[in-house]
Length: 215
Length: 128
Image 1 (cartoon, rainbow over the protein chains, first blue to last red):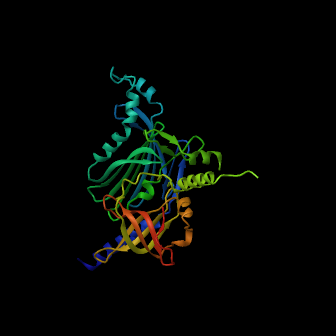
Image 2: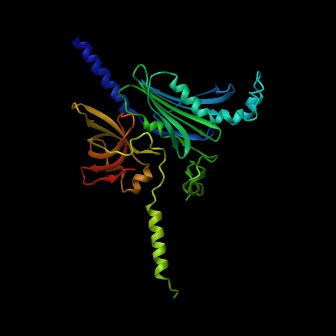
Image 3: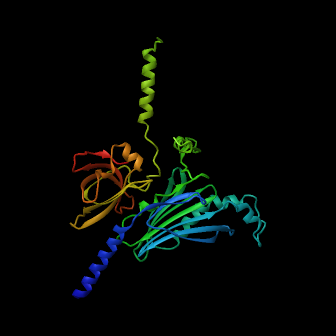
């Protein structure tokens, strides 16, 4: 290899390492969407819509921070008007008008989103059930065809689907600092946490009530 | 003066001990880590993120070929590690530390803490 090429590659690797080192993380909160997450900067927020598994359209918001080859995005899909959305589907069939389909759509939303990530291609290196604060969800880690790596978290809470995605260069660290930082907030912006009971039901934790009381 | 029976005192003491012994449930599933096996790492701290819901230590470790490799070590929340006796300045960039942690199941360079030993004499203290 020519010496200038070697120097250039070394310099690029050095810059790539420095980008990782320079990221300054802070908690971001959107109390209107009832969540918090750590970002390495102020996210760009875009409102849009998303087609669900069974064909209804729901409002969504993306929150994106991009720093060179480091991509961080949180997405919130709001299913809270799901029943109405199904009633308003212009070409709905008898089956689509099923009194339960709008619920099935939400219950299946995590699996549907995980499938969409798998369909992007690449090697899935981790693919399993997960929870944050006992809100059930799913995690994926994917090595993409270009060798970049994607770290995904998907959780359904109170009729909203929360999706976090970090895609970083092949030599970057695992992105747990982002992937596992999601938090769920109540109507007053207080972080929610559940306890899991032996019958698999959930109850709000004592810590949550203490935070509400300001203890 | 009202008397309190020995049995009552013992019962209260036992109940207190049980409550104190029950660990707080984890903030998230640890299923993405190899939780039945420890990984031992020794290296130089490059970054410390003193942030919630988890603190993070980025540790530079020499790999098998002698090249430096960076690892992301996940700690507990600020409150949790503070309750273990850690202070923010106990571990800073440039420190040499040893850790026992649970590596990510896909064998990438992430690890769940675990225990930390510092140069300054903190031995095998939990950082979760």
